[in-house]
Length: 281
Image (cartoon, rainbow, N blue to C red; front, side):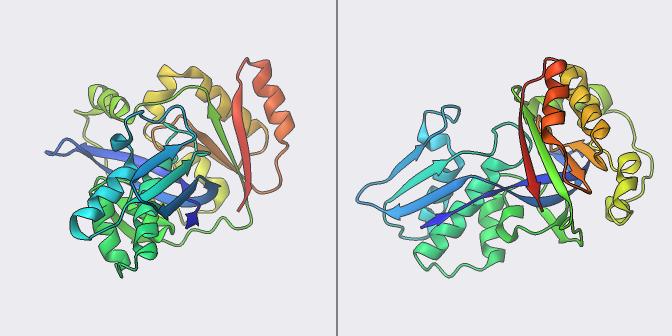
């Protein structure tokens, strides 16, 4: 059985405060996009996990797909399976690829072995695997709060837009990004702000001045090339551009088909070589 776990974008991201459990309360809007890995699970005589990625941990048991299988195996008599994961979504890019892979593993196993788990039950399992994993069970635009596990459906439609996703060669460690945020801004009391649920209703061309990703205040200091990429995306006509999650991927939303070659050339002039991917939503 084969499925295609997709990425997500963060339309705005606020880091509200650090929680007693060490996680952070956030506010963000998650939006699914058609930028996908490929995940195949088939029954087998013995369990195995394979991937074409040379970046993922060599120890299979550290992979979220394997953890998802083991989590369900505690409650269900799952037979051995062979899992193969083909990676296309960049790792450490803020696009939620690993979380999507884990959530889709749960959904595939549920379907393959007719476990009859409802979405609300799958979400409870997903929450044990990672903060973003729950989102990919229903995989629809959502206002995300808490540590990422509190979801509320939200009406956002980018169907007539072109979305460009850029991924430079650098990778950002999310835990380190949160630590840097705490060191720089953790003691500052946030002022009352317009909820993201209201800001997201504004016309798309107004998002540029209203919808922010807090991680940019940290990440752009360490990786100055990211600010250059964002500026060039706006020069190319983007209506809105932002870091996704803690990065390092930046995305841009265009009202008409962007000139990708021009963007590549401008970035190349700055010595920036990136993966560049365009989605017609």
